[in-house]
Every structure is written in C-alpha cells, then in structure tokens.
Length: 71
Image 1 (spheres, rainbow, N blue to C red):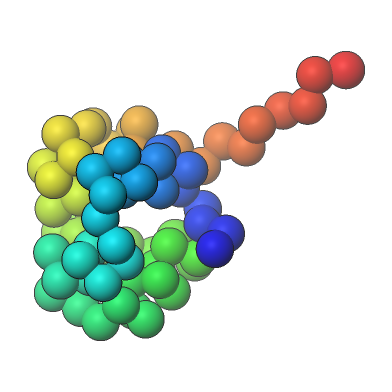
Image 2: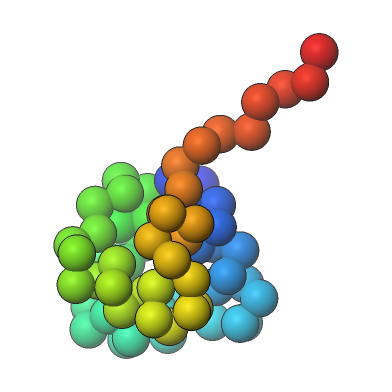
C-alpha cells in the first residue's frame, strides 16, 4: 500500500502492528486508517496519539519528503 508517510509506515512495521491494530489505537475503522495513510489527512489528536505510540516527534513521523534519485 502506498502511503504518504514512509516513517510512519516504517515505525508501524518495526513494532509489528497491523493496520487493524493501528485503527484500534486511533478509535476508527481499518478502512478509515488506510484512507488516512493514502491521503495524509490525520487530525491533530490522531497525530499526537501516533507520536506518543512510537515515541517519535511529529516532524520525523510525518515527513513527506520523497527520496531523490542519485545521478
């Protein structure tokens, strides 16, 4: 699944959390969580929950910078 936030995806994988578990942490359906991963529209409260869950700061967890190709 393509997400806007590679670090969020990486932290989720490191902890071994499923999308269903992530949705439960945030109090929403799995489909809603997956839509937020694609469109990048997390509410501030949701972002705060995720930052606390992964013990990461917002700038790191929600970084959208794409990797640049080395020429």
